[in-house]
Length: 215
Image (cartoon, rainbow, N blue to C red; front, side, top):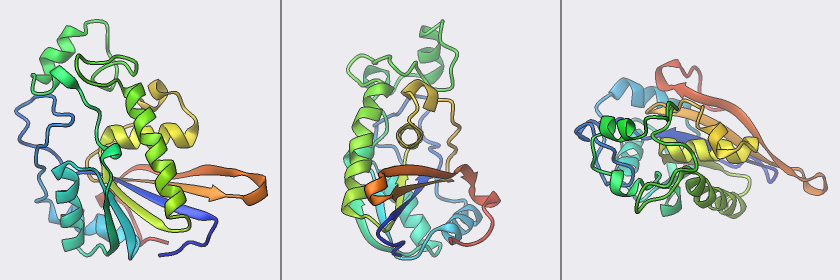
């Protein structure tokens, strides 16, 4: 659906829950997700625009979620796989028990698995995730200006998008809750000679709370 040359609408969806992680950090481990909640998928699909560009990461849980949305009635005109929109790589923490990883960071009591600037051994920090994700968003926005983009991705990716849109520090964007199968709407407004900017319409709207079809 075209929104005119000045407005590019991003519909950010976090993938369905992962239930086979064994309580471990998975990050970029390619685990499957549980797409059995048919009412949630139907409610979320009804919120999405018709014939949007679908963007997923290369990890199967995003593709599985997108396929379940399509089966529930969402219509996509084109699909693009964008590895730069993958979840944070937690390096040697991946596959380790989540409680043990938290226990090893006795001074950290935040909402994310580690402070924004902390780089797990062999992995990347959340700051580095934001630096990876932001250029991909800007590139896709330029390439598909004036369109609807449905991005089925990860919690960290969506927080990075909010960091870009609101000009927040990476640490600040970690304060957002981003639940599985939630919807976050961010518009890019191209004002021509007056410049461009971002508008955040809604954050972390759960499928069963999302009333009404896409405008």
